[in-house]
Amino acid sequence: MVSQSKREYLARIKDRYRHANRKGKSSILEEFCAVCGHHRKHAIRLLNSDQRRGRQRPGRPRRYGEALIRILENIWLSAGCPCSSRLAGMIRLWLPWYEKRHGDLDAENRKKLETIRPRTLDRMLLVTRRRHGHRGLSGTRHGDELLKGTIPIKISHHDVNQPGFIQADTVAHCGDSMEGNFVWSLTFTDIFTGWTLNGAVWNKGQDGIFALLRQLEEHLPFPLLGFHTDNGGEFLNHHLYRYYRDRDKPVQMTRTRPGRKNDNPHVEQKNYTHVRLLLGYRRIENPELVDPINRLYEATNMLSNFFCATRRLIVKERRGARYYKRYDEPATPCERMLAVGHLYPVQETAFITQSMALDPYRLRTFVDAQRARIFAQLR
Image 1: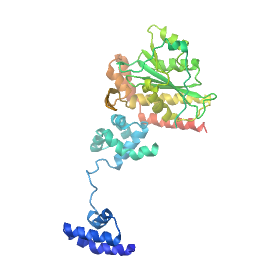
Image 2 (image 1 turned 135 degrees about the vertical axis):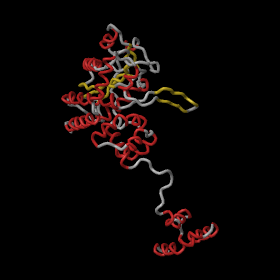
Image 3 (image 1 turned 90 degrees about the vertical axis):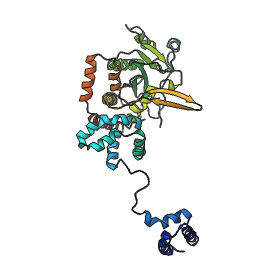
Image 4 (image 1 turned 90 degrees about the horizontal axis):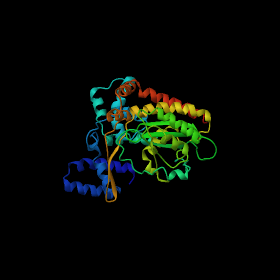
């Protein structure tokens, strides 16, 4: 039977099928399938098509329209594409700055955005993540073997209950080859608050890394109490060891097990979110780009520490073959610093004043423009 004949036959039996009882509908359906060769489910859809036309889709009505999805996409991209559990805690910080640029939202939509749950964000941003969705080479070279017996191994940091205990690591901007000279990034991450600082240096010599370490330490809002790294030679050397050991208040220096990245999880995560997502995996072999990259990092440091929320692992337990984790509420490193109570009143006032003066959208605009200028020189 040709398609035109099938459509004519369907039009003749639709009304009869609609008014028939259960037994009559079953008889008509079997006859329709036998004559036209349709699958039973497809035939049911065809016979009920007029009845379903104009009806709402099944399930609860949609609470968030396309306009709210566009707002969430704007904040998500500007904040550096965080996970939904972190984004849920960041929306309240970004909404006032969004409204300054795009106009005020009505009270109902604002309340919807401020109370949205992470699972809902996952569904709403699914398409956007696919649209905006290589691994780099390892540049770790073993440090001094004698120091390995002096610097203790530490594999867990669950006992850290105050700021000042830092995890540090380097990232190679080497492209597909470790040969020759190129730019390296250094990442400083506080375990307790998530406060993160990044800097760039030409090559990975001990002197250059040491100078950058001192520079980043000067910008920490708290005293350095502990320093935890991998087994790379840029960290495990006598020069740096004496620097931390011989100061008035010695810094506790610890290291990971060789080849175990999970012993340094906080900084390894930031290597991706604060370095790779920003500069990618390209080879950067122009020493003149070190200063522009450091200016880029200055802006991203402020953006991430004042406007990007983090979550701390509270409980991790194993039940059978599965691990169950529970995290605290999302909060920015600045909020964690203010909540912990380790700042002097003058420092606390300075923190609040600085956070109120910063504009996250202006920072994001500068970051995007600076990154574009850097990439333009790599071509």
